[in-house]
Amino acid sequence: MFDLQNKLSGICEAEMKKKFGISTTIHFSFSLDKGRGDLTTSAALSLAKQLKQSPQDVAKTIAQALKSVDGVENVSIAGPGFVNVMLAPATLSGELPSTLLVCSPQKNTKKTSPVIIDYSAPNVAKPLGIHHILSTVIGQSLANLYRHLGFDTVSINHLGDWGTQFGKLAVAYERWGTKKVEEHSIDELLALYVKFHDELATDASLETEGRAAFAKLEQGDTTLREFWKSVVGITMRSLDHLYERLHIHFDHTHGESFYEDKMATIVKEGKKKGVFLPGEGGGLIVRFPETDKLPTLIALKADGSTIYLTRDLATARYRIDTWHPQSILYVVDVAQQLYFKQLFATLGQLGWELPHLEHVLFGRMRFADKDMSTRKGNILKLEAALDEALLRAKTIISERGEKIQTDDPDGLAEMMGVGALVYGILSQNRKMDMVFDWKKMLSFEGNSAPYLQYTHARAKSVLRKGGEEHPALTVATSLSPAERRLTKLLLMFGQTLEDARKDHLPHKLTNYLYDVCQAFNAFYNSDDILGASAEQRAFRLGVTSLTARVLKTGAEILTLRVPDRM
Ligand code: ARG
Image 1 (tube, rainbow, N blue to C red):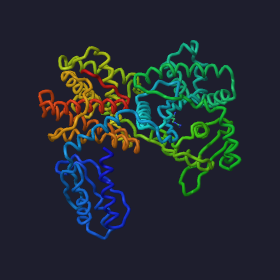
Image 2: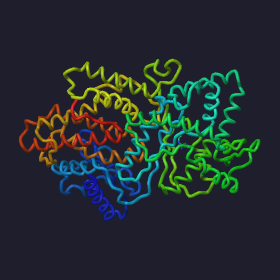
Image 3: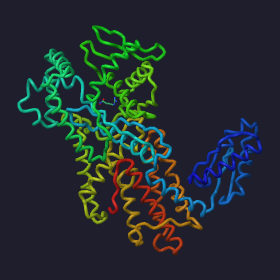
Image 4: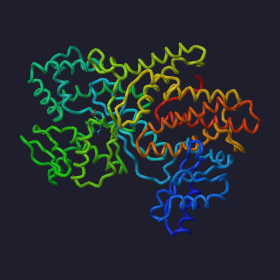
């Protein structure tokens, strides 16, 4: 579709140059509102002032230039100066192959430098909580989006596998452990950690002991190292299983420990450049200019042990040297907003040549169902949430009985349940707090994964009944209102992906897919597909097939799967 939009833009821009001697860009976007044509531009409104003309007059000039263009059926001026263009059915439908191209992953023909996406990054030695799903699926969907659009991407799990918590866990194990470390499950490790914190309330010396143990680990103590290795191993196994269920894939898992031998040079450089200043008791701190309004930050503890920031500085250096990225995105909770400002400011002080750095933050999770937030005093575990989603999906499938057709009810339930959870998150604006609501997530009617999956299966079923799995796209000489709307929506796929990527907002894609589903179902209900005349039938089958492609492509970018029957 970009071709046609570009053509119209080019014609209007040339006219502006000829008539007013100005160089400007005139952008056309699709409009779905009734009576507003197929493509619309508000350029006249923004140009009026510059041209010292009324918006209406500028709109008239634009409209005049478009009237005789091939494929333009009608041009009208609406409201204060919008120019609406109605396209001939053949022109509009003739653009659909461009959407088919958008469905295939693009190549990085411009050879741009990669985008690094840092997400999930749980702190190990604890099972994942439900909230961990946020960074995990938002990050993965952004990585998929970038990759699909032809960017080289590097996805990294910056695992929290280093830090005082290991010292604490080691102390807990030494005191209360009853079997070999490697025989612990992830839950048993958590129990030890929880016990440590319970005992801390009455025995403050534990804190010092824990810190000392971590300092020893950092200095290379062999027993502690072995202990640490076992704990990381246990965590990784349970993580891998969850990542598989969620379709999460990392190019690299470089935990914080990976940077252990890369911090000394950073500390040295920071000191030399006067970025790290002596702090209390021998530690190092970073101060920020008053105008930044950022509180002072510790860079190295008094006992010489490193912290989260020290590791993030070394991480940034490593990433820059290794991949020369154009940007690094950190998909992390809003709670770390201040921290990332400080991190970026510190990187700035170090005077390095930096890529675009962005904290892609997201809000907290709230529960529609009150007793969900705390279960037996613990956080709801991600695994338990996935299992519950699966169970609920199974119930729905058996309740629907005949209405659902599948030869793999378990596979479908997993796809639907996990999909519902993930879609429930990605369909909300990540910048706001997110509401977790089983009913809404699993609804067959709303903006949900089951609705998307059901619509995809319906389109596939039409194709099966039509006897053509992959019908070619044909050109329509007339379009019903439902066909016109669906056609326009399908043509908007490329722009939607681009917008969702640019703003790092996956919900722009879910909203779009929801619109496509609704438009397809309206079309399915109002227009006879299989019983239409040969020419119409061919067009309708082609559009049905393209709809299925778009839904599947979009769903997979969002880490979801869609069934062929359901
Ligand atoms: N492990 C951290 C946490 O759970 C998140 C790490 C995010 N990435 C980073 N490079 N700081 O809070």
